[in-house]
Image 1 (cartoon, rainbow, N blue to C red):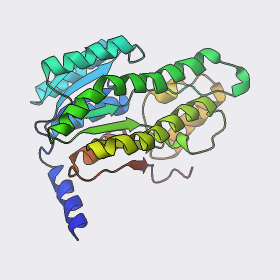
Image 2 (image 1 turned 180 degrees about the horizontal axis):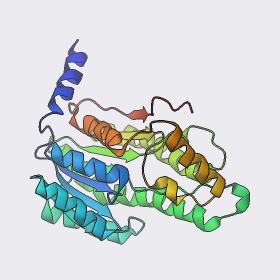
Image 3 (image 1 turned 45 degrees about the vertical axis):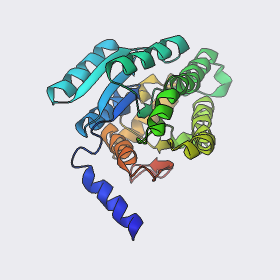
Image 4 (image 1 turned 135 degrees about the horizontal axis):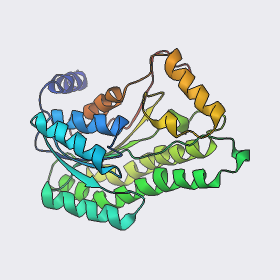
Length: 267
């Protein structure tokens, strides 16, 4: 009964500003899930730092947040560069304060048969989906530790994919990077949970974002574009709402792994 009340209370709070006073960082925020998440977190009261390479997109996003009465800053950064991400973390501390909500969202999807030997595509996915994720963790974990030690909520939420567990043709390298993220989350939770840092991953299915346009294999690209027209896919705002719900849950509640699918998606 107590648990049900806590969850219903959180749901009610999502209509107000349950994240007031929190400092959020969202990587991969120039489009799609990242942009929608930054908007939603700001709407719920958080001050938000948006990170990505495309500065013009970030500035449009921060302008929209500011115009709506929120607080946001732009930090143009390539998360594959460790020193650059460390500098971004220092900027967040200087301009907004200690980050207590990190949404590790930057990623790329490049699907092709493994026999095509598109090794540049393999490396790009490894660099962004794995190295970039680790760079963000390395730069912002001290922030989260400080927040947790001060008795504040502290959240590390990473965007994975259902590809982490599904066996999908031509997805070998992408799926491998997402499997890394999902399992890393479980391992980090063993270390960070006792320190009161919540660690969670979201595994979305088909989302209507620009990711399918990154696919270089014509057959795989046609398949994904077809899925977008055949079913009612998730929208970035659907995933953003899930992130917000995780972050707004009571501090002792950790929603560790959430799979979110379009209703009509079978696999």
